[in-house]
Length: 162
Image (cartoon, rainbow, N blue to C red; front, side, top):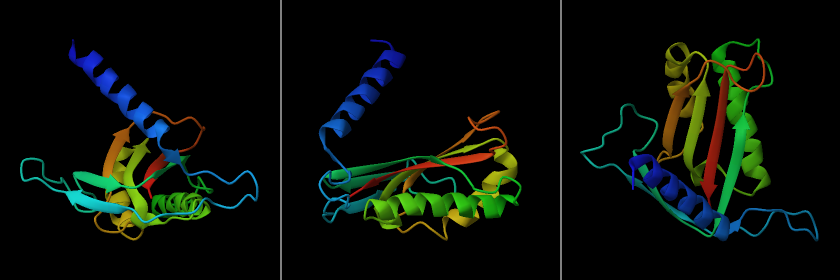
């Protein structure tokens, strides 16, 4: 099998496995968050795959029965300086996590998309440490020429395990 097909099969299997687990959802009866059970997160930091910067871990091994997927979030004020925009974005993610009954300590991966990655990545690296808990989640940063909403310059999504 070719490498792209192997990756596709791995990703498809991973998504199917996650979908088969219990996802965080609101109870249809009372609109309250589902009961949250304690999960564990263990940072994986092999010497052969070191972190390029502090504020994230090369890998996270998480145990739990519920997965919370936070859709890409952006700031409310596109005209604010980038540090403010990033804080607004992290605050929005935090609100979604709270709605699920969890916090930053449950986040296992962040994916961040930047229109001006080289300009904004140093600020992002600073700001994320004000929100994230050790072991820091795995993280991916991607530069892109544009995002779905005109004027949006940063978007961050998160996955938490509980």
